[in-house]
Length: 108
Image (cartoon, rainbow, N blue to C red; front, side, top):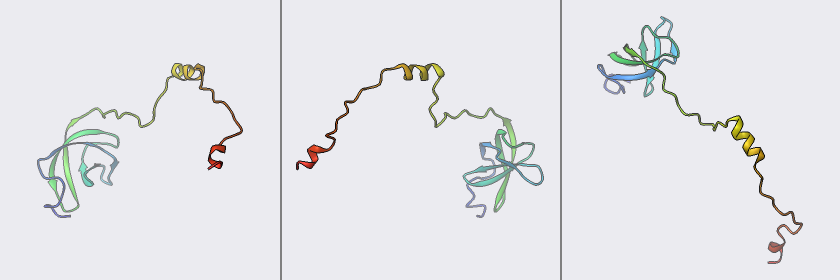
């Protein structure tokens, strides 16, 4: 990946999540798979950064602003205890049990 094919360029501004910390203590974020080193951050930070330098395999950015991490809706449904109780109390549909299951198919 060279400077022309990097998905970021100097002067770009991004909101990124710091996913790791490098050996020199800089936070590491990724933008479209491209690694950005961000000084003065720690794992778990969510920051607005300005890209300062783009190299062949990585870039360097500075923090413009610390942000609140956006809350993503859970992919799992959450049910309150009251809702769960109401579901348990609700009458369930009754099905008539028969022994002729599938007999109409046998007649063909």
